[in-house]
Amino acid sequence: NIYDLMEPGELIDEFVAKDGRRFTLRAPEISDTKEYLSFINALVEEDAPIMLNLKQDYMSEVAYVESKIRNMLNGSEIPVVATFGGRIAGDASILRKIGRERDNGILGIAIAKDFRNIGLGGKMIGLLLEIAKKNRMRMVELAVYANNPGAIHLYKKLGFAEIGKLPKAGLFGSNYVDEILMVKEL
Image (cartoon, rainbow, N blue to C red; front, side, top):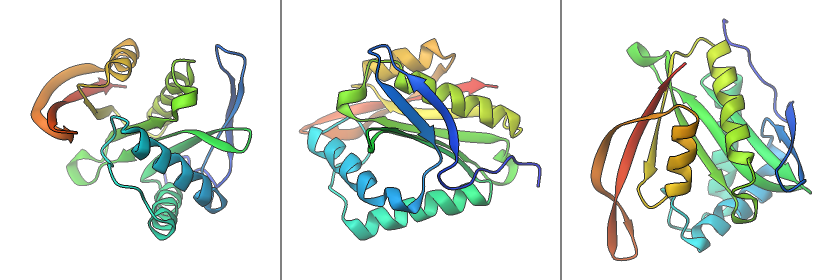
């Protein structure tokens, strides 16, 4: 296997944010499930600009965490979870595509409300891009809703270029929002 595989719970890095808070960046583990459930449901309650808009239940979150771990162990996903004081502050991953596109990945990231605009997202994405490059990925793509200007600014700062839009792709309240497609070559 050419991929540098991570183990559940494996420490990847530590990070001190702009505001002085210290975060642990590591691979997810099954014991994170309750925290993942709180994390995602808080984002849904906030109506954050993410794809999910319905609260998750414990069993769906078990399946989510198990799939992240399974994908990590078989080399098809590079995940990183940021924790602060036992709480999940951020979740990000690059999912390897398959077949002819196996050298490309899809980035996904979410940061809890209390931990935005302190450099955490940039740190997590930077780590993922570094690991992806070591694992012979050549390109990473992402999709972001147009109502998320902070994320769009960060992605551009990290070298992602806008390549297109899906008009009115996501429904927020009674308004449809464009989904912006971006890509970065490694």
